[in-house]
Image (cartoon, rainbow over all chains, first blue to last red):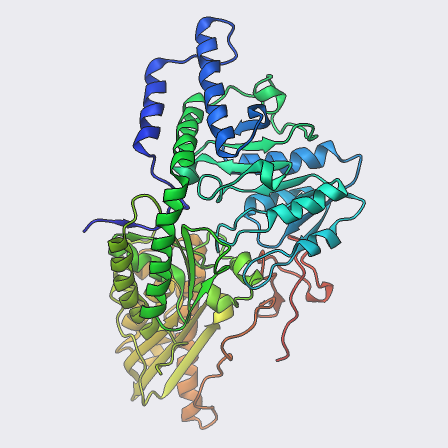
Length: 388
Length: 176
């Protein structure tokens, strides 16, 4: 039985070209980009090549605006805390949405422990933020707006361009957490006109533990890490060059293949959604029907709980994620599902299915066939399920 | 994550279903809290002649239900009353720390079912367990008398309207 992997959001496999680039770098002993000698020059060259590749993926005209980080979480922390600390003299108010990733929500919670205030804008039932609500939330004290580009649980893509027009007009810096978007769908920092944008290599077949932050020139922020003068003084510490080279290679492939990938993913996505509707009764497909990621389907299955589904699928070597509270370490219901109006019970039976390069239509079909039986078995056990 | 015994009981749960002419029913939890368990008893001459369960919950909750029914089956009410949450968790070779509450659910449901049987025998019980209407809109849900924020699960004072831990506005509690 060949395993079926529908958990790309948790981890992407490294593409062969990415592996080669990284292994090449490991074998070469590149040295430290900050060193004054020739080996250091070579390392600096490799670093700047990767920066160029990543800049190209974001259509960023000035590669110096890319800061490499240890991943999406660091980039997000850097953006929010960096701007909040640097601009404390101007104000203490931040605006966000109620479906952000924990990297954003918990960073803001931390700031609240100082004397920062946060306003949270609600989303509609498809998970979209209304830009007018963001405009209303901005006060003279506002020093940052942070709204995610796409949601990691339901896939909905936000009207970032429209929000950026508002923040630009009001002269408030705007950060977008684009971790689940960059390398998956086109993300163009010039078109979006945001001030800060976070991303992670592992969402586009690069290595985990590497990511970055786009920082538009003239944005004021404090570094999270103080030390050396790496990353144009924005992030101290010797660069993870091997990882960064891997991300550069992955970015270049993403640029070349983006269109074809999206086209292919959309075929898989519609097959999966149609298949779910055909094979399982009483389900909800979460997220916006069109304005959403092509590689993600979120489905709430009534009367049953997600961890049970995951364990039963695991027996069949089918790997998926759930948003059930029981499966979360902290036993919390998903704030995203509650925000779009699912009740606790329905959010319990929610799967997040993410797919990619190696997923085939046959995988989708076998998953659907197995899922149908798993759902039936669990519903037979559920006191909430009444046969029609 | 789970012991082999938990996985065995989860994968092939024993005694799933309902007993149509049950003379003792116990239901605990509610879907808002994440799990819900119903135990059906057929008691004959103060002995558990048959026992079945229905559970909405995670792998641990299902395994607990299954193990509990195995332990209680054939026992006298006297003996069954002595089954504790700890006994069930031990018989399952342990549960992850954050799943221990699932085992509480199991023994509680059994005790409730036994009480229901005795109440019926004494002629004072409603035959049907009280069921929470489904679905229920989300609100700060109560575990006993305490109220918890639905976003971060930290205990909150409902009157304040805002969770002090995560800053979310608390949704209103629907009328009972």
